[in-house]
Image (cartoon, rainbow, N blue to C red):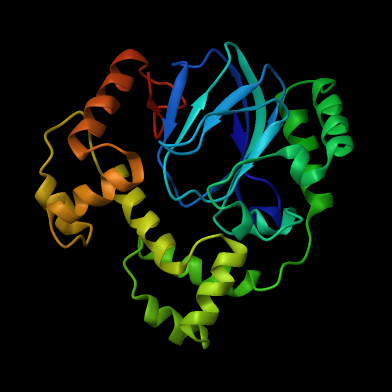
Length: 276
């Protein structure tokens, strides 16, 4: 289950969620999206591999992942149980004690962010809650308490919203003009608040919108899809696909079809991919 938090958190967070049960696959690959993630783990430890050339690390208490620039591989225990937050790209900054840029493509534990005592107390309260609705209310209360002022957040949020509204198809130079700041200043603020530059965020929005436009159940005209998404040509589109996912577009569709065939209706099948 999931729900949108109350203001002002709704300006930073897409939804709070509760997840319990058997994962559809032992390992799941999550392509990058223009979002960030916080997980408070309530079950056995899970593992994350943050890149094809990195070793998987174990997370017992949970983790924070700021907006990624490449795919992550999650290995969930069976069963798994957690509560979490899907942040907007700029949403983690007001809850972190360090600049977001320091965490780019480097997942950290909840303990590293909030401290052992805070996390242990939160996990205890969540474990004693009367059900998922109460658990999400407790998580929302904790987030509200930890909300802090963040320099540059308003600027980054406004310009990121412009990028999102165009699906990433906006000239970065136009953003600087609209914001009334230099491109260097804007890029620095983005790195501080989101962890990536405006150009990288725009690429991620465009890639995500393009992937969601794919209907794996029907025939796909890749050239037309790439053209409508604003890519130079099909080769450019394929390069972006491999950089973001490690897969070619046709490999992606084959894996997506497998998920839909083996686990129709799964809450995870809109974006996650089996990595087994």
